[in-house]
Structures are given as structure tokens and as C-alpha cells.
Image 1: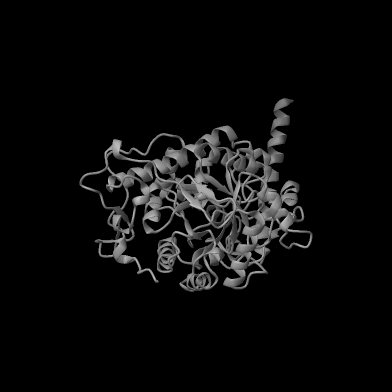
Image 2: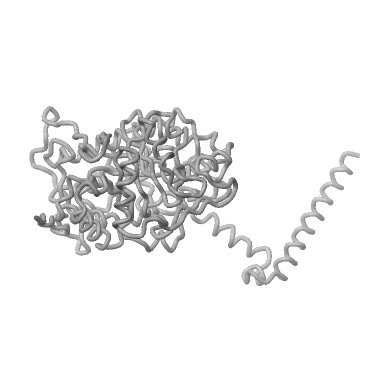
Length: 491
């Protein structure tokens, strides 16, 4: 009897399988959207399966350690080791392609600095003499803007705790200030985006009352007016509706479950003078340093900024500039902008630094560099090129456990970093990842200083362009101060 039931069940399953194949066969040959399925029914689906899985197969099976984009496996492994306190030691030589165009080479000193002669890298004040409460930047490496909403609640909590332990700052991103940013007690830079999330009134305009409330938090150290970012200069932020939870809607002051699309620029800022008006207004209301974040497309922005500050006076200048390279971007962005808009940080940073030096503004305006600066070598290059500090988002995402699955925009991040799915967030244990965030930051600072000591410098603030060489297409290297000569200071 049991055998008869099993046979009948097997026959039923076989007929069901054949019937399903027949159904999909007819569906494929009669549909008109996909030529491959119309000409090769059933089998044609393999093409779409392999297309979806191709990026993951390439990542783990086919690409070499130095080939993958946007970050290759060797770079990610380096970050993971620093986050786990496993050190940056390798054996049998480097796989870094030292002869490739753009390769970084630091000029080693014949007599590097002995350990007893080394000194801690000096802290730098931001806004000193121009606001009521200046801010001390303690760490060379800091956490770049990632909004709560774009990344998850446990991710923000881990970043806040880790930043406090390591002594670096945490930029809120344009999504407003959440309780999770404040949880760890770290230094916070509040980002004021084009939609004024977190500081908007009922009509969506800037609220001075909200600014004062935010400034009342002791750990909110500075404010950053975001003009654009490297991922999408010329377009506002994008948060898919699937990520707009009730909590995020309240923090941002927007509708729950609907796409959150911020304007592509501040409606009330259409010129350099209006930008400086906003800088002075926010600084007056909050009493804290105010900076500007932007990607750079050429010399015009800095030329106009320098001229306006010269005309209006040093009090009108932003206290810092955060320069994001065109290669930046940890979230969702249109590919046309992510691929082709704005200068790389390699070109933008020296351009900005030179403009400030030429205008006699380098000591007045601190420079923060951002854009794939996730390794100590890239941070050391940025300091030599003219940065005072470095921000990184994706470096700290790797420290949180990001595996570069490229699902940041889909709410399906498998490591819980960029999703609001509670099941996926469960994988991100706050206490463990906070420790990794702190370790990554500390080890980054330590290894940048190690590079400086090898160059014969007592601390990393001594890095200048003559300490770096860049490999050219010929295979030979050229000093950075030859590629980007220091300008004369205008009087």
C-alpha cells in the first residue's frame, strides 16, 4: 500500500514538473520583451541567473587580489586585519604593482627616526578665534558621512562607540542626528544636507531653533554644509522607500515608506556669497565651527571662494572644507554621475590646497580629504598633498564587516551594515564591531605615523609633497611636488 502511494506521489510530481516546464516554455516563446528567452525558451534563463551571480563569482573565484573594483581583495584584507588587530605584516613580498601608473612610493630616509625621538601627531584646532566653541580634531583618520537610514541602527551604534574609544569624529551624514549617534559619546559633526533633514521646520526650511537644540549637545562639535558628494555631485541624496522606517521618518521629518529624495542643491544657496552667508548664520546660531563639503570639478569654486573671503574678511570663511573625490560614495547613486562626475581626490585635493596656500588661507581653513582613502599609504599621501584630516566611509564599513556585496541600495545587505531587515541586522553584533571600528582607526593612525618615521619625520604632520613619488606611464616615478608645485603666497 505504501509503495503504491509513493509511486502515485512520484507520478504526480513528475507530471507537475513537466507541466511547469510546459507552462514556462509557452510563456517564454510567446513573450515579446526578451529576445533570448523567445529564441531559447527555458535554457535562456541561465543567462540571467549567471548575469546576476557573475559579480559574486568574479569576486571569489576569478579576479586576482589586485583586480577587483571598487576595492580589491588585497585592500579589503588589509582593512580587515587592522580592524581585527592582526597587524599589517605580510610574507614573501608585496603584490602591490609598484611599476603601474599612479603607484605611490614614499621617499625613505637613510636615517629614519628612532622610536625614542618620535612624537605623537599634533592635534589641530578647527574654528579657533572665529566661533564661541572651537573643536579639536584628535585623530588623523575619521568616520565620513553615512546617514542613519542609509546604514542600519546597529551600524551607527557600533560606529559611535568605536569612534569614542579611538578618539575620532563621526559625521552624521545628511539624514539627521539619531539617538544612536549620541550613544557612544563620540565627537560628532552634524551634516546639513540640501533637504535640511533634522533641522527643518514644518515647511522644510532651516530652523534656527532646531540648530540651537542640536548645538546644545556637547558632543556635537561642528556643522558641515553639504553641497555635493563624490558619488553624485549635482544630485541630492537618495534613500529608497523600503529603508524609510517610522523611526527614520521622524528623525528626518519625512513621510514613512516613501523614497526620500533631497534636492540637488540647497534652494537658498545659489552663489558663493550666499554660501558664506549660510556659513556665518549657522556659526552665529550654534557658536560652533561650520564647514562645507563638496566635490570639485575645476578651479572655479576655489577661485570664487578665495575672492569672496578676501573681500568679506577671514570671519566669513568656512572653518573647514571637506573635499570628496569623484571616486567616493558608500550609498546609492546614478551610475552616470558616480562614473563620470567630479575630479578624483588625487587631482582635487592638491588643487584645493594650492588655492588656499596662494590665498594665505591654509591656516584659517582646515582641509579634510575623502574618497577611497582606506589604507595608511593613501592617508599619508593625502596629508602630504595638503590635507589636515582624512575621512573614510567605506574603510569603516569594512571594519563593521562589509564584504562589498554591492547591495547597499537594496536593503538586502548580508552583513547588516546597510539594511533595516532585523534578521540581517542580527549578524552585526554592536560590541564586537565597535571594537573593530576603534582598532581600525587606531591602527590607521599608527601606520601613517610609521610611514612618516620611515621618511625621517618625527610625526605625520611633517609629511609634504617632496616625501611622495608617483609612478608615471613610462614606469619612472616623479616627485609629487614636481607634479603639483607649491604656489607662491599672494600678499
